[in-house]
Length: 53
Image 1: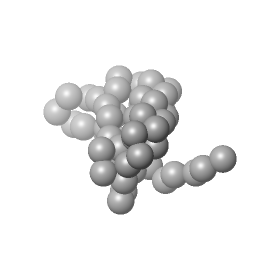
Image 2: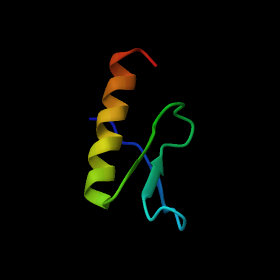
Image 3: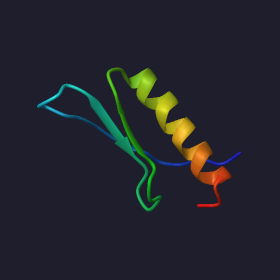
């Protein structure tokens, strides 16, 4: 099992949560809820790892 640290912020303009994994290019996403953001980040990381990034 791999673990990654994500940075999560809430955009004051849109109200969306924005998350990214430092030093992992392409690992970023946004969502309306923290649960949705977590799921989106999980999917993005899986896709990047499968693609050999």
